[in-house]
Image (cartoon, rainbow, N blue to C red):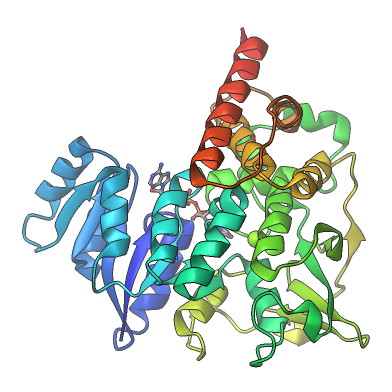
Length: 394
Ligand code: NAD
Ligand code: MG
């Protein structure tokens, strides 16, 4: 029986994880649940799964939760220290990292250092601190399983023999990785009308139901840019060996090309419970509750190159990926601030990527030799992005 901590249990990935876990009460026990501000939703989850620990953002929320679940033995904690206590709980062996954004970095890194099995959905943590995170994994020999659907697909298509572990995929004949992208809700919208896009339009993804931040990232395709950097670290591949292919049907979740001419793909319904179940069950397969993909109903599957004019975020992410060091942390932080401002109706949709670009050009990247330097770059980029936005909205 595995004992699970879910960081971000009230989010889209968190709820899907609990859905899979609830199908297998004999295999999984929920040890810790964490949320930011959705106290009532967390209380409902606590009543169903009876975790040892529940964590919320602050003391006020903790008090509120305590009152809502007074009948349970669950210990209620709060703040960043609470998140760390949750992942470090002695009975936790598996951590689902599903907090959105940079806020997930510290607890996920602690889990990596402690050698827990990490199911990684929180791509921003790896984008920010790739080398530090991967070093922690290597030193503690923690198991790292990608939950992002593309990376999970690639992981499933990679060789997993004794001779081909992380870092030696290319030696085993892997030539390149192909990340598929749906193109988001604006694949066909006239480019000159994009400045009228509202937050709700940007969050209406054609194939996936996700949190608002990643939904906006999918519309701009910064999500694919972050995923490119995520894939570089997860699979030790150079930036120019990772292609991005638009595939609007989201049936093929990504592919691996081998030197012998083979192209391996993973197909399935667009439902995150498949990669989540893969991570929970690994190395076995478990029922996820996902509908079977009916090949007979598949009509045309389309593939196209991403247009740089429609999706300038991809070029920016490639630039940060090549620069390495703290450049990806700067890219990520600027994007988080710009997306949040767009979601609050403070800037236009078409201002998001130019703001990220300006921050990336103006904040000087350093070598990412320590966590402190990464966090400093993150803060500098946030300050710069906020300054630019203040100037634009004055
Ligand atoms: P979401 O917004 O639905 O949920 C985010 C969760 O994080 C919530 O539980 C929230 O309470 C918590 N949270 C937010 N800010 C926090 C903070 N400052 N401190 C502590 N907790 C905080 O997001 P989501 O769609 O579930 O995405 C979660 C992560 O998974 C993201 O990194 C995203 O990129 C990645 N991901 C999501 C999907 C998807 O289909 N939703 C797919 C691939 C990857
Ligand atoms: Mg993805």
